Length: 278
Figure (cartoon, one colour):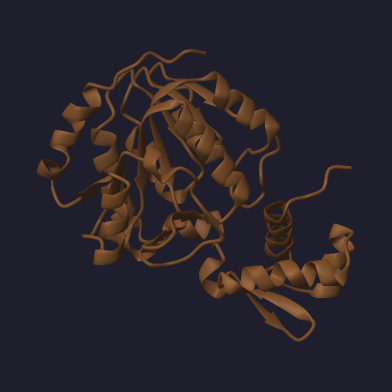
């Protein structure tokens, strides 16, 4: 049996905490993961140092700021801002373009903003995105395989990753759970990060879209290869620390306040056109 890495064990602990509603006893975690209580305590100590969990007597709690609300709640949260951001992103996408869209709620708004586009080549691991854009306007939609998660309708695992590796797209659009000045773009789940990494590797241009409410928050997993992100759409100028992080990684920031703020980016995208390769 292959020895699990510390990161893999931590991800298992976080997954069990999410399934348990945010808290669990150390002994219960040890039993579920077939390891000793001491192994759990060592990993919990590391997670606590990163302010992801809080250790209490005999148990572990996820810190409130890293608990991701249900998908339906996130869809209704900051709806006006997400609609404006989504429209701005949609303005950079032309009829006939190829695009990857992830499972985030803001990305769901991007899918809604693309409903009048035609001949799109869409790759996604989100059943919401697939239902929104399939069977309309001559679009081609590829839904990643695997079991759909109950709380957000996302597909993950080997089947999903295999599809993403086989399809190259012009643009990849990602939502994130937090934007941190020290740790960059952050996600709530290691599987989401794995999907994002592979999708970014197979895209010409990578876009992150997040409202300013995510600034200086934290989530359990940092997005790999920040340098692969080309542009960040948001609704408010980032604070100095985040601005420095973006500049360091040469990520263009688009603050959505009017069409003039992103018209130039549309022209830049036109230089990055490439046909999808199934």
